[in-house]
Length: 314
Image (spheres, rainbow, N blue to C red):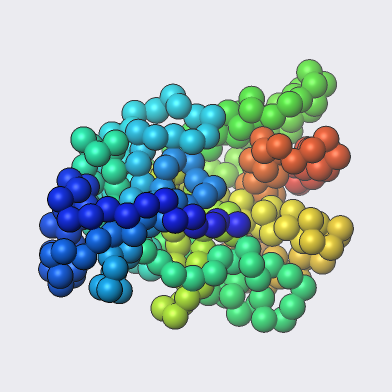
């Protein structure tokens, strides 16, 4: 769960604070309003909320030149510009934080509007109220994926899977089993399609916030175009099953909610058959994404087993 910690105050005359005022274009009414700084954790980079005292205005700054995770092998300026562009593209179709400005000389800062809300993760429990929230997320993803088409990159889908496999602790025998099953998926042609779409790509329950304006998708750092539309639903389904396992010790209790979510996402019986034919591949990817984290040996073995089971669908 993301948490905020007060980290200081920026007074008028601070260059970054004054730049924020300038890019907000008159939303800060009093030029002398200080900005309270709140550090947001966990995050892949330094992320702060800036709340202007007495103004009711908050923005978020994400500093790509200050990674906090293991991945330092990237171009921070390019990453900053890519997320800014993806947010602008996605905002034409779904609710996302407002992309306000970028500036490379401030540690590659991306400034967005602040979204107040509770993540889907908070609501992942065996409760009928979850159905409505999953309907909202399914609708959001369907609009995102249906908003435009682009050339589809099938090779990247399989390369991504192999890249994640390389980050999971696997024995040589386990890696061979995964490779054999991936080969069957490729030979079956299930994931082949003529056109791709934009995907969120980091479809974790923490990245869908519920507030007064409904559901908002956040964190488009990893977003892609030219992708398979079932990528996002598959990742989210794996994350939901794992969340139910952690909460109840029984991932199977998530199944009614997964079925509802996928039907709402598909929108028709024909589309549902297509989605459910592809979703095991991306659920396997979702389990392995979680397995990269420090979850403990017992959970690691369960995640690998579930991923292999999903790939048996071909």
